[in-house]
Image 1 (cartoon, rainbow, N blue to C red):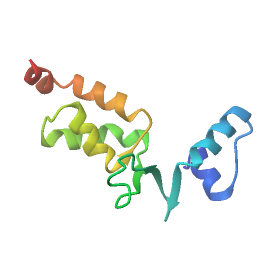
Image 2 (cartoon, rainbow, N blue to C red):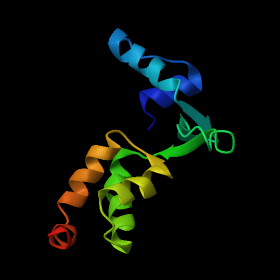
Image 3 (cartoon, rainbow, N blue to C red):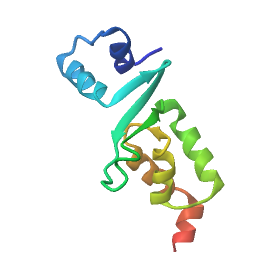
Length: 116
């Protein structure tokens, strides 16, 4: 099953709801499809490395896989919120990435204990 963004990018079909259609058109400017895989495209904000690493592509992670990826990456080491965000966001993108990771790490007993 494909979501409305992928459907729009593949066949140009938009939902009938005007507000949702505008949102999808806006989102499509920051995404590309490569061999059926959806990527989030973002421009490097660091001016010094912009020439070398101008644009990065991260796989868009379906919501059903977010917790599995967080558990997998967090299981290696309890590195804290910022490092976890850096590691995950270098490969993946999902809605509310920062908030979900912050909540996930904040709920980890090992991280909370280590912080004190």
